Amino acid sequence: MAGLGARSVLVTGANRGIGLELVRQLLGKPDPPRWVFACSREPDGERAQELRNLVSRYPNLVMVKLDATSSTSVKDAAACVENHLKGSGLNLLINNAGIFKDVALDMVDEEDMINGYKTNVIGPLLVSQAFLPLLRRAAQGSSTKGLSCSRAAIVNISSALGSIELVPLSYVKPAIPYRCSKAALNMLTKCQSVGYKEDGILCTIIHPGWVKTDMGGQEADLTVTESGQGILDVLSKLRDEHNGAFLSWKGSKMPW
Image 1 (tube, rainbow, N blue to C red):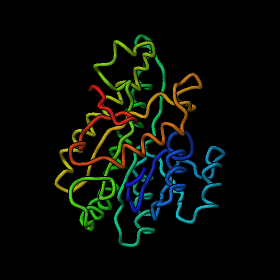
Image 2: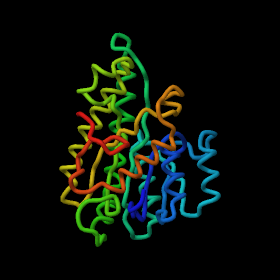
Image 3: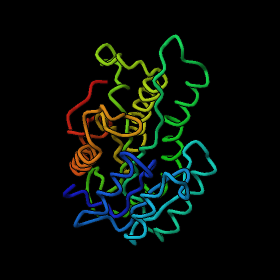
Image 4: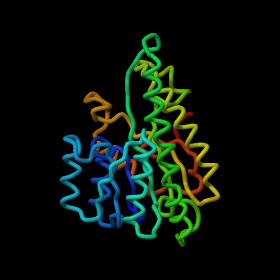
C-alpha cells in the first residue's frame, strides 16, 4: 500500500470478509489514514464484533451504520462522516458491500434479480451519490495533480463473474443474479469514470480474486490477507490511465 496517501477512507461492507480485511490492513500500515470509516448495516450486531474490537484499539477508526439499499441510511451515513471530517473531504470510497446467490438460469426468479441489483448496483450508486460532495471537496482541496486515490477516488469491488467475455470459462457457477448485477456495476463504474473525471475523481473497478470468505467459500484460491494486500497495492498505483479500468487484485486488466 506504499504511497496510497489517502487522508480519509470509507469502506462499505466492512464488518467481515474482504471489507474487514481492508480496514485491518489500512489501520496496520506505518502511514495509516487519518480517518478510516468502516460501514456496516448492523454495527451493534454479532457479525460486527471483530470490527468493534478494532474500534477499541484504533482511535482513527469510526464505525458507521450504513445500509446501502436504503437511501435514508446512506444519507445519514454521509452526514455522520461529514461531521467527523470537519470541513475536509473524503479521499477514497470503496464500495465493497455486496450479496451473492448461486442460482441457475432456469431457477432464478424476480426476487433474486431485484435483490442482486438493489445491493450490488443501486447500493454503490446511492453511496457514491451521497458521498460525492465530500469526494469533490477532497479533489478540490488537494495539491496533487492528476487522478489518484490520494486525491479522490471511487473504487467499486466487482468480480470476474461480471465479465461478459469470461462467461464460457466460469459458468460452472451460474450465479445469474450476481453475474448480471456485477456486469451492471461495471457499466456504472465506467459511466462514473466519465461523469466525474472533470471533478478530479478517479473511478475504477477491482476484481478481488476468488477469496476464502462466507461468500467465496473455503475452496477459494486466496486468503483475505492476500486479496487485501493485493487490492491496496493496486490502489496505491492508480493514476489517470486507470480511470474507468477493470483491474484484478494483481493489477492486471480484466476482460469486459
